[in-house]
Image (cartoon, rainbow over all chains, first blue to last red; front, side, top):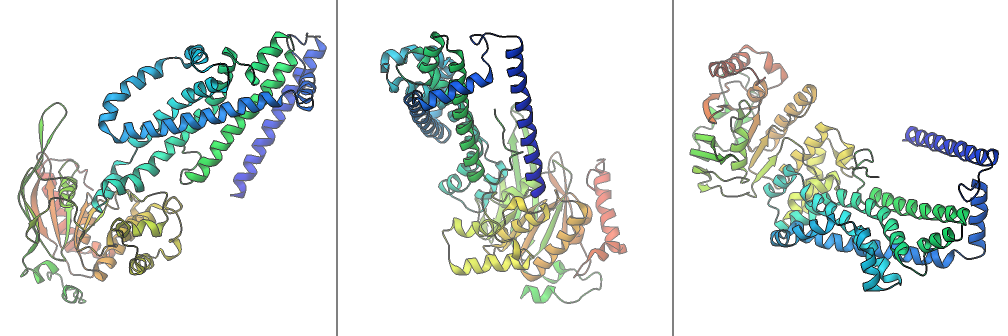
Length: 263
Length: 283
């Protein structure tokens, strides 16, 4: 156990070292070749800009709006994916009637229908929440269906041989089995949620980090754009980390190396 | 009572248990059993054809045969997991039509639920009957102690070796105190050393808790070592080609495998397979 943590600690140190070297090269190259900050700002100027965005309080309303969009959209999409996925998996009629349409809808690039949602739901948070929810919905839906299909045949036989009812088999075997893939779906959806919210804001918004990027870009404030990008990737990492943590806690019997690693 | 008959330190060869209890009527009666499957291309495959077998109470029956001889299908029908296409398959005079509470099954894979502790896994058959009584808990703990798993009750299956997992599966099968124990190549996935140890363990269980055991294997020595009788099956179509009395006394040990009578019986079974011009996939 301690050998593993020691190993992962040295891996962490190595990746930090790589990052430090890359940033140093970036900074040095920008200064040495005198590159315009509109094309590529120096890391130090990005950090200064980020600090200013935070201390002036300029970023907070945008960060807050985007976080609400991401979290509500993810929650909405995940719950819808869970419910509809479970219905498709467990009710044969539902699978026959609904699934083909869902597949058709899934092939549609969600980004392409974002402008429609702005028209339907307005410039406020609602349209972004709906877009985010739709983007999160499909990976969760697919993972729920795959999860329920992944129940081990031998274990199903075992439950049957010991006289389990359908309901008992569902609660004691099929749902826990499905959790493994469902969490993989959550992991994908968590990262897609950030994309969904930002795309929605690009299409039309009055507040949010995506809106802020567009505004700063328009004002040629490239260090500011980079600063917001750092905030966005921090949100993405936090979402991903939260999902990993939940997975380790709730599907503890899957060792990390065996889990379906996505992203 | 059966245990009293079968337990004596009777080492003299030729006094098989099955002969001692041959006066009893059959517990499991199989006559003219057929099982046909439809393949996807629409062909009919005879998985089992004209199977006749009577099994007495507390008898240990080994079933041996190459892949595709229908031995697993036979066990699945006995377990109530599949239905027969035609023929009689009765337990105590009633046709087997589904899973029965007095039957315990051990599969090739341990099929433990990975999210449950060892103890919860053993308790599963009781939980499925909504029986959460203290007595069941005592029974589960007793079984685990008997199998040398006392200290592992609160562990999870992934923390156990393959042999230990299969011992947990045996505990689970014994949980409801079944009269019949069905075992489908339970040690097939284990290495040779663990397998021998498990064979000894199983004989210890069987001498302690007498049951009717139907034990499927593709190892001839394992079949002969454990069984009162060995049912030899052959494929295409799956059928019983011979039923052999193992007239080797009990208790048996790994040394039994070195005796000449044991060797003769194994050789005889190999001859049956040889006569079917099959390659020796069976050992």
